[in-house]
Image (cartoon, rainbow, N blue to C red):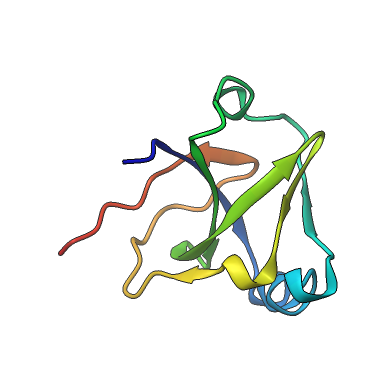
Length: 105
């Protein structure tokens, strides 16, 4: 089983809609998310870890992208989006926080 390392960012629906349309793997083009402060746990990760970028809209976790590469930005494909139905409601904050979605199944 893969070790999952995730971060959660709070954004708005327009930004998420843009990320879902831009950066298609079929066009060999990534989506990007620039980081002001880079997650140390990503730097310390290894090749077998799955890195995730969770997105919350109006405080509710909506889903995540799988991060395929990074330097000073996170790189992912639109097609890697995984919806989380009835995602957790959290108090919005700036920056990022470490986060892992716990399946209720």
